[in-house]
Image (tube, rainbow, N blue to C red; front, side, top):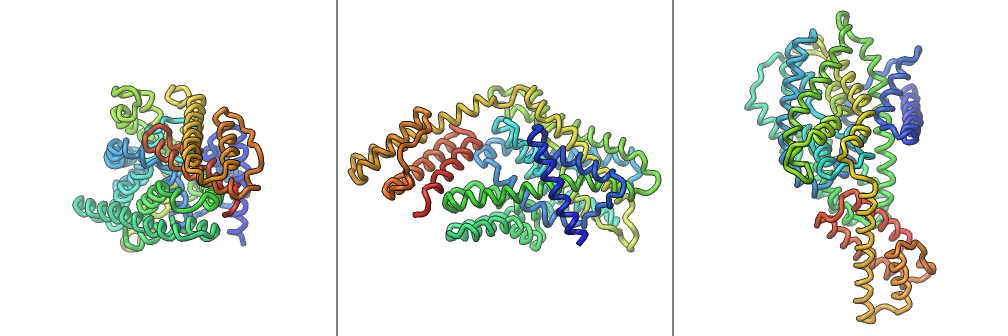
Length: 514
């Protein structure tokens, strides 16, 4: 009963804080972490202890899947080289830098310092996506940050498993074995995710019930994760691959009514899970600090030093790579490097990894330094979410690389006009064939012409005429094809494509069932 009450309290707290965050235009993850810290410091608040695998199994799969679905596969092809460099080189460099610093500044043994470095080496896709939703970053910059956080997990997980093996069993590091393990985790996870996406796509194409389709969409990330973990590969990689592939083909798997319902349900699930997990991060830190052994009073300064080192290493790697994502020049840009560096926050993934560290080492002796690793990990996560999260939007605005609202509005207007002109051309073809009643053609032409003149008035009631409804569905299908062509030819951004796709889905859904 107490667990149920805690969950209800977290949901209520997260909903209230997120409401204020939207009103004040503050990133919700940052405000949720602060709220969790404030509540945890209130006298009488019970200590919060999360079971090790709860976040990894319950929370991560749907949040990773949602982040992967938002990934633009078209833009990903343009930045795959820097993403690959960051997923390998930056992760290894960050782990080495944090591990070396932890050996010098903390009482952690070298093996546990290496564990800490592996835990904090990668950025977090959940936090990056949640913080970046409201930012108007250029497509390549947004995809670089998001893709890096999604695809660097296999590298960090291998490092983490190697580090934990050294700390628990006091073994030596065999790098050829580690390389083979990386191939198993990343390659096996990729194959499993691809198979899961293929199977789900075949099932969803044959499903016409919105409820069943919604259930399938909710179960998909958990199925991909569990299948991959059961095969001893990377569940995280499997979820990411399945999300990217299904996000690419989602418009082909169901009709407009089902797509709208799945999007609405998933938005609620993602909102609840994101809100609760970021609140937990703030709530858990005081309880973890209370469990620290004597002699660990310098942990705040140690966490600050580690966060600064992570940012410094990231800057050094980002500056030369920023030339790849610069839209107009091949010269590196300090502005892009700074924004991409500041967007690389830590979040749910490091916390889930740290919680999975075993409690005991070989010989059933307690694992030395586990409590300090948990505290430092959580503290660095809190620091990045609060400091970087609250300052990211002002930094983007001052950098000058953000897309102006007028630019986005103009792109959307031009795209809408192109869809309307394609529809009018199709109506001319139908008129020449004389296969559709002239009255329906006239009403449709009048409606589309009004839209081309940016007049929202719609004469008549389209739902009252079956012939008109069928014609409108045909035109919407043509506009969907035209929208995909505009996107594939790089004439519109992924954000514009998704917005117009949703508008077309709403209009088609409003026509009712056939």
